[in-house]
Length: 89
Image 1 (tube, rainbow, N blue to C red):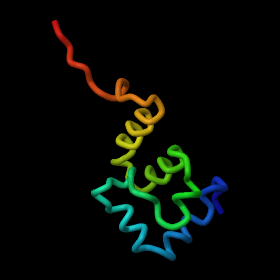
Image 2 (cartoon, helix red, strand yellow; image 1 turned 135 degrees about the horizontal axis):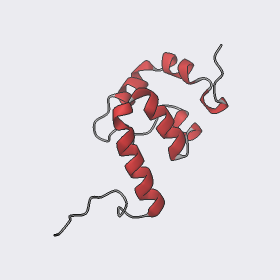
Image 3 (tube, one colour; image 1 turned 30 degrees about the vertical axis):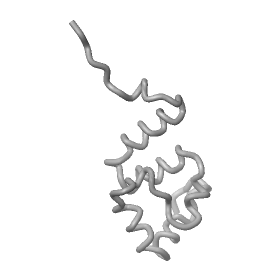
């Protein structure tokens, strides 16, 4: 058996027990999965943004960039580091 990080033990069982909830999270468009609550107890188990990004990376690698932008914006309380600035010459 592969070694798992303790916090994520039981994740595969939770998905098997509630596939509709996980599918709803996985396929959510509004709000996007990185902003949508994880199903069941996993929202509280993954209370910090980093743990939630790990779960997101497993299911929706295409949304990780957006989650990282949200993470940086929330951490610095600014969009200064995540928005492009126009260059004048």
